[in-house]
Length: 215
Image 1: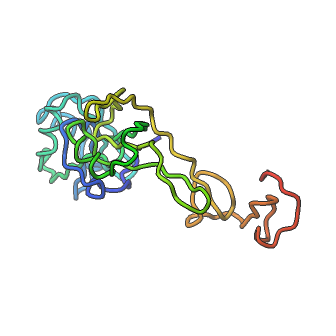
Image 2 (image 1 turned 90 degrees about the vertical axis):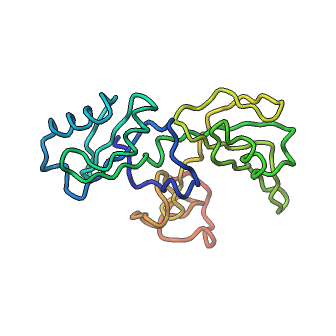
C-alpha cells in the first residue's frame, strides 16, 4: 500500500522537526515525471548520501526513507535538487508511533502535566482513555502516548515509575449509514442500512424486526 501524503499535518500535532524522523515527502513545482530518475537518484545521493529507499507516489511526489539521523537533518535543509526547486517535509504519519500505558499512580494527574514531563522521551501527545458509566464520562488509568519516532519504545519512565508500553490498536472505523467498516458516513456511497435488523430502507428508531447481524 502506498503511504498517503494527505494525512494531518505536523503542525496539528505541535511537533517540531526531529532527527529521529525517517520518512519524508519531496515535492517540486515542476513534476519529477519529466526528469530522468537516474538524475534524481544521483542528485539525492550526491547531496546526502545513499538513502534506504526512494519511491514515486501516485501524486508525482517522491517518498523517501533515510538511513540515518544525519541524512534526515541534511535532507530537511535541501531547497534544490539538480535544477529543480524542492520542498521537503517529514511524512505526517509514518514518523510517529502510539502506545498505551496503564499507571494507576497517574489517574489524577493531568495529561498536560504528563506530556510536559515526558518530552525528553519523545512524547508529543497524551490522551486519556475514558469510559461512560451511568451517564457520566469517567477517566481511566489508561493513557495513549504518541511518540515523535516510528519506533515504539518498550518502556517509558514516569518520574520514578517505569511503565511497559503496549502497541495502541484503534477501534475499527464504522460507517453509521451502511453499517460497514473502513469508512465514515461522510464519504459513504452505500445504501442506508438499519443497524438493528441489517436491512436497508428504514431507520433503527422505527424498526420492530428481529435483531440480527448485517449480512
